[in-house]
Length: 530
Image 1 (tube, one colour):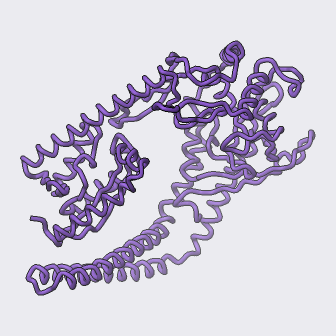
Image 2 (cartoon, rainbow, N blue to C red):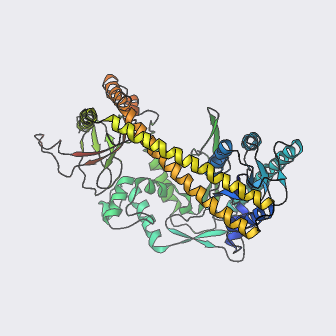
Image 3 (cartoon, rainbow, N blue to C red):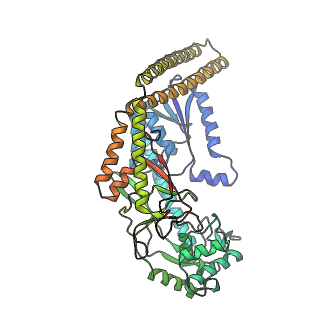
């Protein structure tokens, strides 16, 4: 028997079959399931306090934020039960995910309520039944997934296009009188693709009949006002992707980026490394590039390939400095024959931002942090923390009053349930009174959450003088004492969120104006108001 005064949640999640049904006009799945579970709640005479709607697809519960939030709430509040349309909606993940879910429900004394059956994880038979149901759900998921993957590979062997998006130069069309899709050339875009291959391998009159690199081709297309599909300018990586795409010679590349699972510190991580030996199948769509031209481009790219070492950070300011004009991150050009020192540059084609010497930007940023800390020390010495303590006391009194009000409202709601059970209240009166009280409880809860945030902010202000300033000082001191760029970068990222760099005038050969740039620095909490 369910306790009508208990706390109950509702969990809603779409499956792959639901999405396919929606595409055929069967209505929005979550709305139908929610209505069904609301009717079930009315039949059971229980009130749903929270609804969790999962709109993302994820094989593991770590990829499902609403599930993670619900499990956290179960641990904290220990509700009486959770309503789901089917037991399988909770998890189709691996054994570890299923075990975590069952343990959370068991130790939280929380029942799983479905229209067919209510499962009590603390009941031995119900627990076994639920675990078996989740196991069968996982097995069904694997069978469905294997069938889908086999179907995708079979379609590729038949030459059909299995991607959702057609590459530049093509449009995706449905095959007549059979399942699957293929590609149809778009004349305007196909001409641009042919132009790109020609520029890369042999050159054209636009390049003075000299071959161009991917970055140069991107800049040339921008100058010619040729736009890609989803951006206002061409990226070097997009050009390289076009030059590597087998679709342009009427072939399909399958298994180029297979998903690999690894475990680091007990956490499953997914990666999609490039497969050096993917399968190549003949496609049924027409090519727009000749094979000899495609393989010539391929050989040129392989000959000029230089592996990058991204395992270590060589710049203390990596990931922090952004261009104020185009909002894109600046990159460090190492010192070389033409430049005697490292330089910060914006690589956006046509951006008016002028680069600066790396050491000047670093010195300006560190000096800004030192000046900010100095000014805050002066400011904070004049603050009267006794006033903040008085404000804190008033806020704590308000919190105590809200807590008492919450207990009072909860007692009134319990009384309403008692009167309904004793048949002193009609169903209509019970719904009105319980609804009004539930609304007041929710409003009181929001006020309590707001006052908690205000109390936390005041407490941070009080302790900042004793904790934040020494921490800030230690970061700046440690920065000057180490030569490791990785450690320096980690220190800066503790206090700096991002920096906008602005400079539109070049310096002279004599060195005048080289430092005429500005930095707009955004600090992280709890330093943002320092």
